[in-house]
Image (cartoon, rainbow, N blue to C red; front, side, top):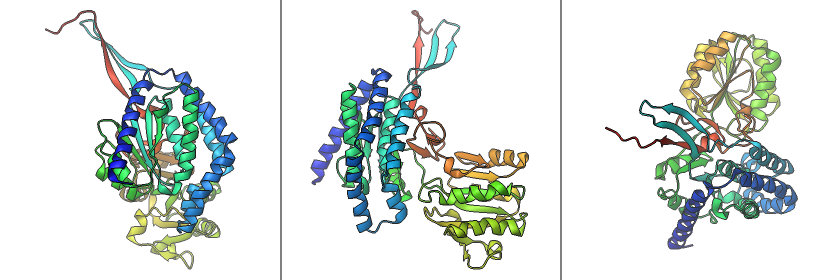
Length: 421
């Protein structure tokens, strides 16, 4: 496809998104709920078609040598479809923040001033591998009355096309502008660069995928970007941890689904733990097939552990590999996390309230947890229905992003003829 043809495609999509975003500002939210619930039913009814198209992508992924973790993220199972359908129903049931008035002020001159919650406008989502993002992202954008432009990875092209096609049908049947949800219909990477230059028509870019993708988007975008580069998540097991919950939490965080951004990547063991308890934790991971890269002190516990390097403390493995380090107390754990963490999700296991409070206060991450698995760092688990992404930025959103995070505000000033003197 020529660059001129690509430019025309992107121009039309961006213009259509802008037009749809303006139309969405005058849409009754009940129409959005109708579309989401309709699509929820359509996903289940069209399961065979969806999985047929998805198999084209997974077959190509295996042929091209993609990792098992990547193929796992790409595969649409029956469970995936039910999860997407459930997420749509949950988003439909949520209250939209759009139209909310807040921070009312009555001035001495009689002016009434307040903030009004409004959509951001046109949101561009650039993502890899996981086709469920197509549905989740579009649902949240619609519920907050935004238009969305989706650009999925080439490895999920057929899956994304069929899902977007179903979304378009649901929009049309519900009386919504069809261009409120659009997919860039090409795998040509130039289309992404062209899209990132449409700052006059696209208001926000959210990339989801590997670090290289996100850094490329940040480097080339003329549009504000919300991002997280990596999910280097930690669990610190305190000497005061309840071992009955410590082992299951650690194993769950690393092995329940190792190819996602909220999986455990570095385990910090308190040196005050008994040797028996340290071994129990590590042995439980080895039994699950986890390959461990450890510091000198940890390697003394069991034979066969690999030597960790400085790079391992910053690594996002996204598979059954784990970095393990011994630390002397909660302060050293916090220092390690704030030095090496990607500020995504970090957890402490302890029975001591003072330790937990210190960890919560001083760990500089978007989600900080106590006595639970990092795998709960997720919009669905936080009660958002589904999420549009997880931000490790501090502006404009942080952590799992839901409906509220896709809105902004404008000042409303009501007067009765006042003039400034």
